[in-house]
Length: 393
Image (cartoon, rainbow, N blue to C red; front, side, top):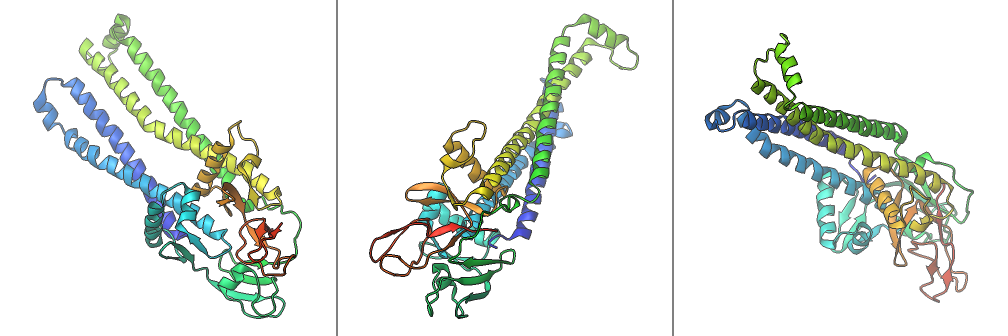
């Protein structure tokens, strides 16, 4: 609802293309330049006029710039996904920059700059105010189920009909064409595991795991090749076998030595190119695994607010690390329809939620602007339990 999905898909393809092109050309241009420097040491004229020298200088400048641009773009897309997830879970329709700063762990000034930039590049359906964000959720139908009165968005978010006082309101929001209801009736436990995950999570996890495994395998093979080449330096039997082999076309010890040096340099640069792929594959696999574990847990929770300490165990890591992994899984899009919010000074994972009480049982005042399970009446200061519960999908 808040993401420009088609544009983000195109930008993700662009980022991958930039990364692959930049890494490939950087590795091979630097590799050949290193080989030339070793092969023609002291021959400055040959080094300056070699065909690969202009390409080396071009990619040593352009390659890092392409990688930096792709990295910044990817991080911005991740942040946009997190903002979108947070906006989807909001019940009030207005979010302050200070609130987003606490949840994101970034400065207010940076939050404001990002939101202005994202509105042009990655996101939609919100406007920037002096101290926060006003959501512009588009509704095609919003009405009171008791008296049939049309309900304005701001009134809908507070959960009380201005005509009859009922909290049984309904709105059809343009978010996957689902009905979002505020109701006095609490339903049974949800079983919809897929609701909280990327639709092809298992396939993506297998693909990430294969990328990591193949990258590590090729790194191991390159290391073995480097070790073999090092041990062959000065091995007279090896040099003799190469010279006597008519198919090798090497007639001197010097040429054989240069060939071994080229092998070592080539394998070293292959390793440098494969390490990022291995790291990305391992991280993506980790995010996918914790998303799978958390989504199963979320589908069984009755409360929409989950403390980090209540998250299921994952590889023995502590609560802070688990919360960080959940945040990154939301940013990368592996976890959906949940966000991280701050209530009573503590960060919590928040699932889809709904208001189920509309009046204070002590004084009868209307409950408005509730965002957490417990609510303090603004008139009599009575603490009301269970105002907001998990929404069932």
